[in-house]
Every structure is written in structure tokens, then in C-alpha cells.
Image 1 (cartoon, one colour):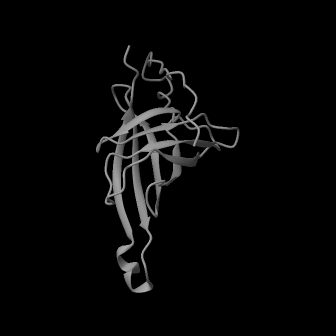
Image 2 (image 1 turned 180 degrees about the vertical axis):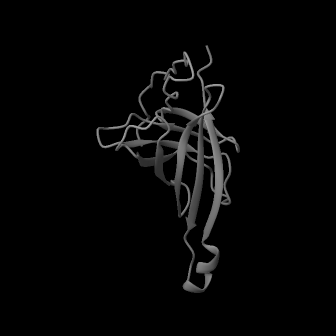
Image 3 (image 1 turned 180 degrees about the horizontal axis):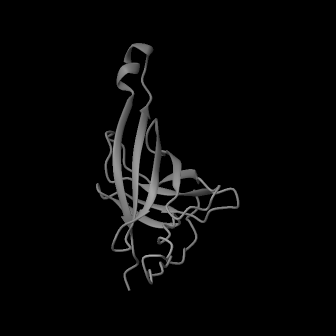
Length: 148
């Protein structure tokens, strides 16, 4: 997986009054979650599709954790300020794959937050073990800002 290109830090504009439109949450950029995992989401194309990379901080496997590719899409129909999105991470170091779905929010202080829910599917050896092959969870991501 090629390294993602350097991305400019998105900026948010402040509200002038209560009648102004809500702040926009921008998916593109670097994010960290409540477990210490980091991801980078590249620019959206005209269809709302994006690619990126994910470096998890946690794993159930004993294999060495590696940077893994992600690909997904943002719901792009109405250009909403707090869009819904989904992406898939194909783990390069294990026989599993995770799908995330969520929404990009801007809180009262103007901080961008990704609220997500995920399903992780691990390969099992036979049908009898299918019951234990899928895990579900939630993660909250916040924007990673560059150190200056």
C-alpha cells in the first residue's frame, strides 16, 4: 500500500450567529480513536469514495500489527454538513476484515468527532465455529492535529 499523500489540515469556520449554518465535519485527514488506533482518510472523489490507511492499537492475533488499507464512501447526495459514511479495513496481518459505519459530527466547541460502529469478521476453520467469527463494537474518533 503506497503511503498516503500529505493532506492539508482542514479548517472550520466559526458561527457568527445562531441563524448561520452548522459547522461542517470534513472526513479527510488524520484521526485517532478511544483505543489509540490511528487512521488517515484521503480526499473524496466526485462519487464520495475515499481510500486511506488504518493502524490499529489492538489485536487478538499474536501477529505483528501492520498498517492496513481502508476504502469507503461518504453519503454525498445532499452535501450535508455532518455526513454519514462507511469503510472497510482489510487487515494485512490477519485473516480478518472490519467494516465501519458512522457519522461525522461537529460538537458545541467546534471539535470534529466520528461516531462509528463496526463488525469484525475473522476466518474460522469450519462451519461449527461460525458463531464466534464476528465481533461488534463502537469507536469514537477525534481529529489528529499536526504538532507544530
